[in-house]
Length: 100
Image 1 (cartoon, rainbow, N blue to C red):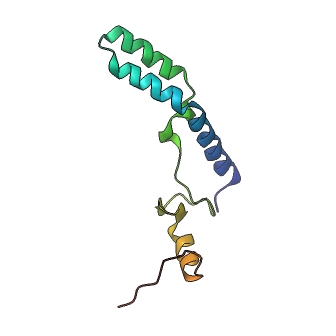
Image 2: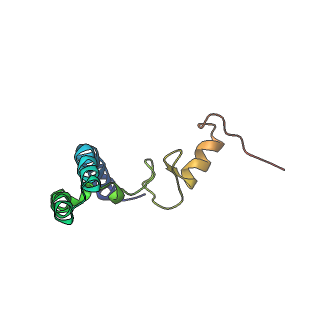
């Protein structure tokens, strides 16, 4: 089980990404449309002025049940351990254990 502080920190990052998403995208779009280096530098400085945690790459993929960051399945949002337990308990619809 991950520490509560790590889980809360990740939630805070997700909120910041959602808050600054449109501003960040518009700055990037304008920066790519300009041709002069000076104007690009101005947009680059504006991007740098935004909070670091507002970048989407700073969000860590963690299991929302256990907080485990390794062996994470994006489709389900859980780790492989939780996935296996939930599949055996028939909590994930449409999944069957394969046997051959």
